[in-house]
Length: 540
Image (cartoon, rainbow, N blue to C red; front, side, top):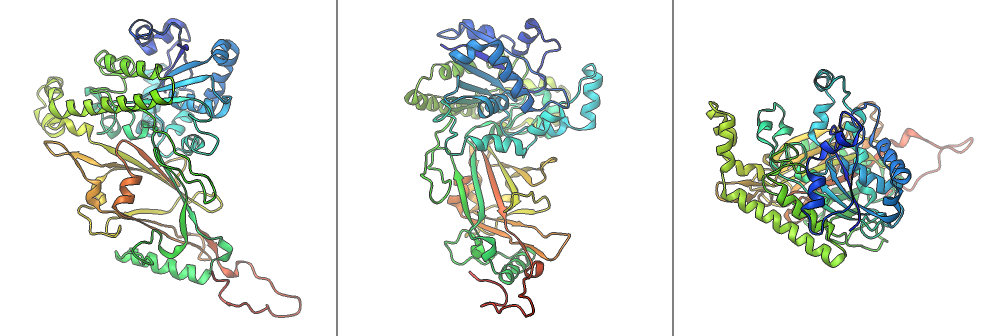
């Protein structure tokens, strides 16, 4: 069995960079790996990195890790190792593979414990002035780690590009780097988080810090862009379509699709790239489709991001289940066993949901915590199963065809589209909407796809009966530029294919930006312009 390296998350760094202090970050996990696994891990290495310096970002941490690995622990680099990472440690290891690793990688397996792969709502809270003074006063002058928090915020362009790297041809984590990954996260915040005045500490479908959907590495990626080259688009036709379409939306009407099978209104856009785990991917019209393998994914019961009782790293109540999942991952040797591990991880998740459906024991224990606050308990804790409601996270990033960010666009999911009458409006599924602070071109939506109804979990997404994705932008600085609006019809099958429980969907949109015809004119010397076949401009 290869040696194991443990990598912690944001703000978990020890006060001192000494072995005894660093060991406390991981609780009893190092000892349990050595004594409770079968076979035991004979070589366990712990690590520490600085995350609370405002000027150090995840690229710096990655480079520092690479330097320490190759110079101080070259035996790991030359002989191979496994990594067990917690929270932000997932981004450190994935970025190290992207930036520094040879192919195949000496890192054989990465086991993610609540990996913050697509962000955490706490990153947004951690950047506030309140957080600044709480850290400064309560943690001996500690900074907030602003550069790391930027990468951890929902909709971080850095994180998007990190994960997109492994979706490109020749960059597959499994096939090209030879790294097997495993994703494990709980869906239960610790009881103390229920009194936190921020939604991200007690969100349903999260472990109190990281959303299940944002942690799962089986994310979806879709890229939408122009279906024809901009210079061949008739300016007047584009203006007429844009005006008609935006006005229709303002009236509450739908865009005019060519026929019942049209996906995009106006024939201005099409799907450029599509990558969904377990399905053949589409890179471009000429690329050979490849099938992206599923990453084994499990949700242990009553497991939180941290605390001594419920924490995924050091929790005493969750230790048996988490260790068993780690054991299966470490003993996974090839493609055949990898598929078997994925099945066992899924079975663990099914067991968790069976337990959550059958037991209300957390309600009783939490009443003791909030003695005398029966109304609070009744209002917020009478359905503990809701914490396990299955959610999805959908991010939409909008840029023009040149790659420039479009920060002031409107993104709307129209329930009256989709080609069918809605059973419920998709608005009822939205729990949170977040526009990234550093990259306002990216908006992240959080949806409750399945809700506990007292007996079981009810699928709400299928009741929406599809939607129209509507994206508009009007340049406030000039009327000589038109952004051609996007109208994409997603029927029930398409919507439920792109948006799935416990997963994130990343949608990149290249919105057509067209300058007016008079922006640039050409004339022959001494004469009038040569007549054009179409005075309005070239048609397609």
